[in-house]
Length: 50
Image 1: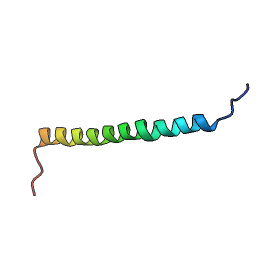
Image 2 (image 1 turned 90 degrees about the vertical axis):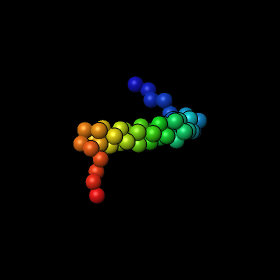
Image 3 (image 1 turned 135 degrees about the vertical axis):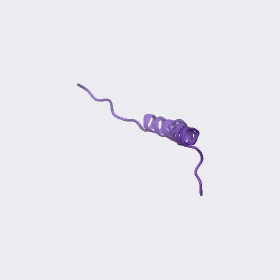
């Protein structure tokens, strides 16, 4: 098996994809999922009382 060497261009493309596309989408998904969990728990259990 011959392995292709990693070029700077492909490394830059991967970095840009991760920093511009992947991390923002993951952060929106995590925050949205957390909000959905809180919303569903309040729907089933009622709002918190302090």
